[in-house]
Amino acid sequence: QVQLIESGGGLAQAGGSLRLSCSNSGRPFSSYAMGWFRQAPGKEREFVAAVNRGGGRTVYSDSVKDRFIISRDNAKNLVFLQMNSLKPEDTAVYYCTAKNLVPWDRVYDAPKDYVYWGQGTQVTVSS
Image (cartoon, rainbow, N blue to C red; front, side, top):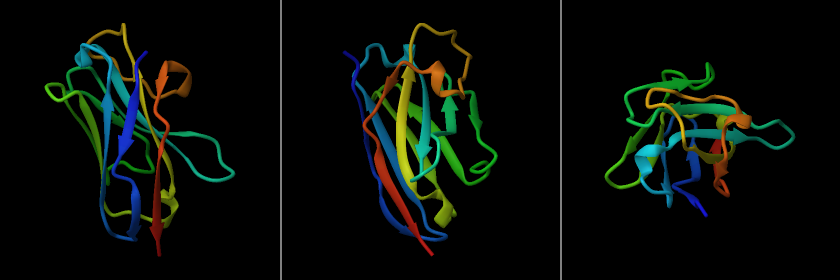
């Protein structure tokens, strides 16, 4: 059973930064495309960012592009989401996702594409 465990959430002020981490128990880690989604109260789950197996290809939602950076360290089985210039509308529960048996260069931005999900970590941005 693949387990995804997120960490790094918390409270930040508008304009500040947070860095989320996600560990993936699946092996080899490099066989998984990874992503981040978020869900705010009363809203649908939305795509945030995704990275391919090797880390060289990324995609972002328009709402976070140029502020957030997704990256991965295949040697440490970790994926990261560096969140800069945070806004109150970034407040949400953030979920790490994973999908294996995929081509090397593919990235995925739809919830239905992912098989594995973490429990989520809360991010709250105050104005």
